[in-house]
Image (cartoon, rainbow over all chains, first blue to last red):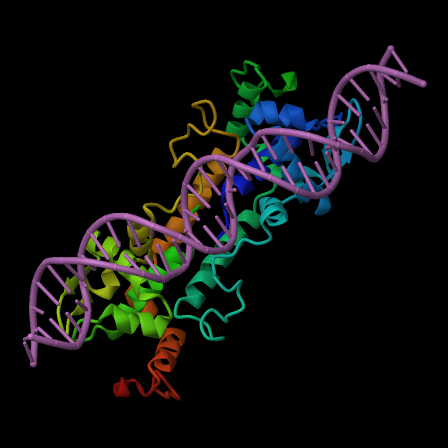
Length: 157
Length: 157
DNA sequence: ACATTCCATACTATTTTAGTCAAGATATAT
DNA sequence: ATATATCTTGACTAAAATAGTATGGAATGT
């Protein structure tokens, strides 16, 4: 099972992008500052995200990254897959050759679990997260904005 | 998130125990042979399982390990917790201090996911696994038995 | 006595994580 | 044209975790 800081960083960075990519592209330096992730590490992660066509980039001053699709069309699982190759609780990658080319005793259990995790992460898009109250509140804090009632006053965003 | 070979080995070994601990205690050497897990590694895992009172042991010839409770009363999550301390997809261990003593942008997402995983693994006991057809078939293969219709012929077990 | 089994600890090779560092390539603003 | 911001690539590294090995014991049944 692969769900480590790496995947969490990637989802967090992509969510930051979704929250800030209203008009201009977002430079990694901004994401680094807001989310507390090292710039060089972000560069590695975004190289993979770009290869998986989840983001596109613009170089030079004023450049940065943009989501390649609408936030609603990017499920969380796509981000994790782009970084980690797979979300899989089995040892054999679902092939069923865990022991002597046969499935091991608990193969089916891990297959079931993998499916559950996949379903959960496939059912939530970056767009879903953007519209969550607590995400907006945290994002406002990170931007140094003071927001009392996020949803009722969101015209100020 | 912690769900690695370590936890899988532990669950597999415990299931082997549940399948074979009808009467006499089961020596780790048998589990090692049947499940293809190194004996020394099993010893480390069972030290933790014993400290967590999931199994009890008997030394000397004819000795080995036994389940400390009925297989029906041991959820899979208990085994993993005994080995890994926790099943938790967050970075902060659920404390919500992931970034500057405040929850990070994706804190809630990982909390939700952790809860789903926990629910799934808490809802399945070793007893549930023992009664599964495919587990019985695999177990029969490992024991070198030829079983055509496992459920219909299980008096031979 | 002896073989079997658990028990404990220390050690190690490999892999992964989570970066750092350096050297570019490219586009934009001036 | 030049300076600068930004992406792009690749090599390197420290720390941790994984998946073991190795060694030496302690208890117990025969």
